[in-house]
Image 1 (cartoon, helix red, strand yellow):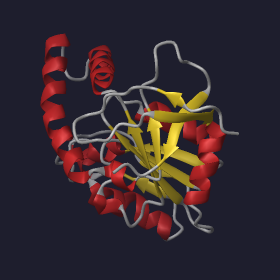
Image 2 (spheres, rainbow, N blue to C red):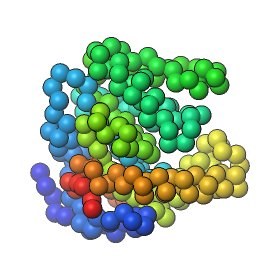
Image 3 (cartoon, rainbow, N blue to C red):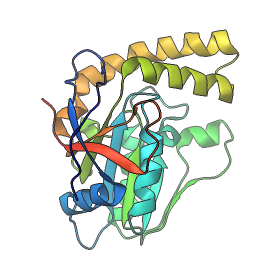
Image 4 (cartoon, rainbow, N blue to C red):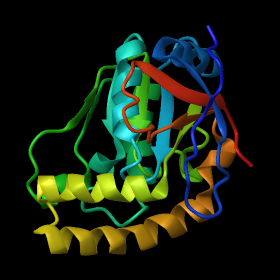
Length: 229
């Protein structure tokens, strides 16, 4: 079911083409499209959900998992934790992709988890149908050969910043309000340069609107087939 196109004016970061007219559909139609794109019978399929910080990636990933049978949501932040910035893709290949490709359960503790005494592990059963790998850099070129479908979450850059800073202040992980704001701006210098170099929207099978109009809280999703060039 396709509903009438909806015009939502998002102002993405410089260099990223803006989507003007979106199709609004139930999430189930989006996941049906992704399932057809990522058709790889007999093994776990990886769907990368990439986008800007504060842009709605985690929210979308959770909704996809709710509508994809046998799916697990894995955040790249778990691999990136205390790892060199944007240099964690070998950990994904070693700790997630390799065991799943061999038909084994994933039970992985990145090296930094031991070094910093973080509890727990990244766990994914071998029988998992889909892994929704979500985070900044999930669709990086270094993982292109193992990712079955890419979702780029387009967001309004100003709204993503507002939401991201508010989230960081609420969590308190980067210090008080002033420290959280300073950290955000320092991080964005690196993130914007990285995404501009990678340009993941140019290889995305699907583009999803991550920041929605004020008051638009229904259960549908705004998306268009990719890529954006």
